[in-house]
Image 1 (cartoon, each protein chain N blue to C red):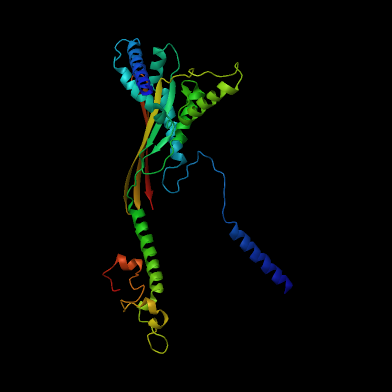
Image 2 (cartoon, rainbow over the protein chains, first blue to last red):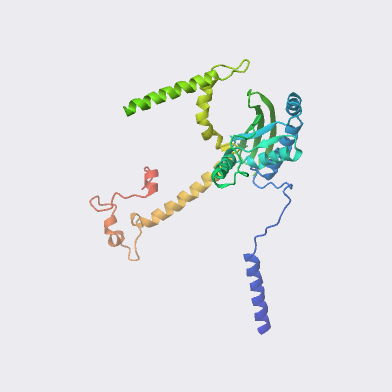
Length: 196
Length: 137
């Protein structure tokens, strides 16, 4: 009788423990394609980054600039990316990949923009009164960008009953800061068929 | 006198600034009126540039048939639940009788009497009453 009671208690404890620990978390490869809801996800961001990186570094604008400037590398600054799609999409996930490719390949020089640049200037201002004269960095010595990179994300949704086709188009473009001439436009088009 | 000095100073400063801008050496084919645009954007630069390297979220709501159906369903369930709760709150409106066959609604809640307009709280109605005024309330 005692043995049966012990076994029953052990069984109940096991059931309770297994129920309470039902959540499982496993690490997956970021390159693995996992689609759950059909919304924009890490795979879309990665595919966009790959395509745009390949495009931007292989197009003619780069060689044209280097030929015109006696082998100098162009300096690029990142501007706005306008998300006009139906979902919240953070462009930084693929823009950072692109910036990383600029630096890794050493084909394009990159200058800081936005809030980070503000922070740099604030730190430089702080140095004017707190650093030694020999280490203090001067104002007015920043590198001016030759091109600005801007972008947009658009989407089209076609849904009826339990079927849905979602189309995303991500565009990035490089514009000459001096002349406003657009020298490169890259795009990534993604279409998804979702069936509920 | 002080005002006059300030005014004179501002006029001199502005004229000096504009003459300095005009006296800058123009590049070949450069628009000589460039300084007016420059003056405009020098003021705006800080407020615009602080958003550089960010994503501006101008999203729209796409119509999704299935999502809309799910929403209608959840709204309907919510409405019915609210209706049940309201019916429970105002149960004296219904002709529930106690075991002896007498209608006892006025006995328990005399101030909520739906038949007598002079009583207090008579104008209070539930949300479904206002949503569907033509129903059999």
